[in-house]
Amino acid sequence: MFGFSFDKTMEEVKQELDAGKDIQLIDVRELDEYQEGHIPGADHLALSELEEKAAAVVAAGKPHYLYCRSGQRSRTALKRLKALGYSELYNIGGILHWPYAQKAGNQK
Image (cartoon, rainbow, N blue to C red; front, side, top):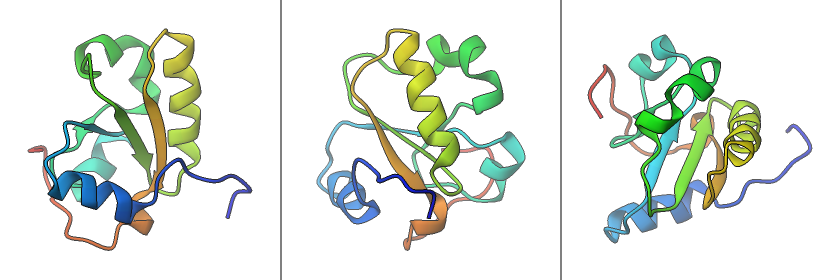
């Protein structure tokens, strides 16, 4: 859609979650978008607040799977987090491609 590929498919991510793999999902959309529906268990870190809140949200010692609505903001977030020194970052695209149940509200 935007001329770039994603690091993992949503199906691969779901399989890793179902297998209990220790990963961190990070939704980089704005809070109102996150509240409307997000992948269960995902942490929220809005792209607009990334530099200010990354240290409080990004967990150490695990892979970080970033997503947004379509994949464009998560791509930008990945680049900005890399510039801050974070590693094990993967852009998994957008929630538009998540064919499984979503969770609404502020709860993970």
